[in-house]
Length: 252
Image 1: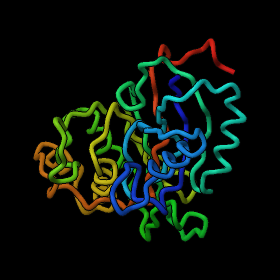
Image 2: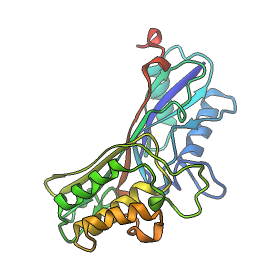
Image 3: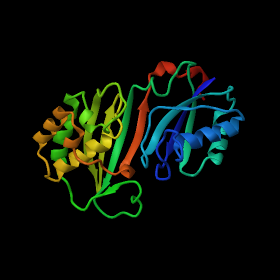
């Protein structure tokens, strides 16, 4: 039977989500834990990939296992096997063809910036020593919704078929000494959010004009955009799916 696992993790100790040689990843830890727990080799498929050091408040993966009679008890036991920086939040039965990556309709990221030294945010937010102009950054961020080609924010030499993304939301808000950038789209390119944040920060710190943002987007050239913001301030916060893939008759 196929299940979606809703998970969260702190990305500091991992080289991203995807399994790779000679580096510890979130997918590898989960896959090994699941295989040990269910006593059979398992392959898990995630909703997407996060880069080295990036966190996830919500990421789904799917896996096929024998029917789970008590999902809450299974979740509790699996969490005892997992390291402290990875947690299973929910186990959800889905249709046999449901796919954690291809069925996702949107993904939302947040980027956190702290304007003051905060010992509790050292590993989870980018500390700035100057306060950027949020109005300028929001004016530029709104321009993202007018475009679909984001090659200028993609990691160079990325092996992708298209640079098209449908961005539905992009805005900054301030909560005390914390700045949070929220962006939602149907898909994201590798390094895309961090490149956008770095470029918007140049605008907020008066290093670039708002109109430069339009030029950068039109260029399709990564070298025209700003430097990528540090990975440790980035979170995958939400993944959305169509209702029909969830087996409501099996819900707790």
